[in-house]
Image (tube, rainbow, N blue to C red; front, side):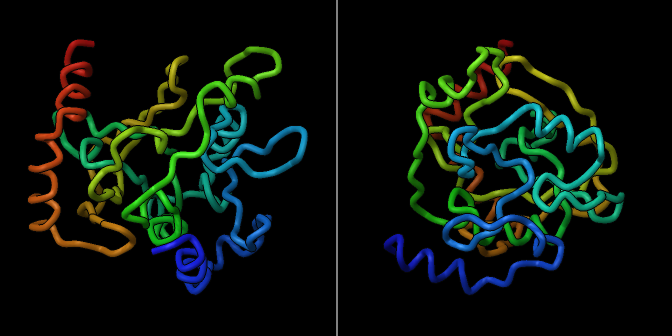
Length: 217
C-alpha cells in the first residue's frame, strides 16, 4: 500500500469524540497531547517524546493522547508482545491513554497499523533539539529496528511510574481489570493467533539479544 492509499485509509477512520478538540496537523489528523512541537516551526514531531510534556500529563492524570481525565474504567496502555509477558514485568514506555483514543491509535498510528513502517528521525536530529543539552527529548520507541508482530492493549489494576534518564518514563503494569486485547496492523486478533506470532517473535536474533540484555541488567 503506497503512502497515498494509507492516507485515504486513515482519513476514513472516525476521530473519537475525546480527540475532537485537539490541534490538527497539515494533513488534518489530530495531534496527541504528548507530541513534541519543533520550537522553531511549531510542527508536530510524532516520533519524539518530550519529558516535560509527559510529566505534566502524568501529574494531572490525563490521557497522553486526548488530555481527558483518566479513570479506573477507561485507562489503558499499549505495548509490544514483550511488555505483556509477566516475566518481563509488563513494562511499557508509552504513557496511559483512554480507551477510545487507544482504539483510534491502534488503527491510525503508522507504527501500529501498517505492515511496513518508515523510521524517519535520527538520534542526532533529536539531540539537536535539546538546546540546553538537558536531555528533555528522547527518540520514541517506535524507532527500533524490528517492528512487533502485534500490539497489546492492557487495562491495568495498578500502575507504577519510574523515570530512567536514558529512555524517559517507564510504566509498570500491575494486575489487570480486564483481559489483554491484541491488534495486528489495525485489526484485532484472537489469543491463538497472538500466541503463534509471539513464538516466532521470540526466536528472532534481535529479540533474543534484547531479552539477554534485560536479564543482565
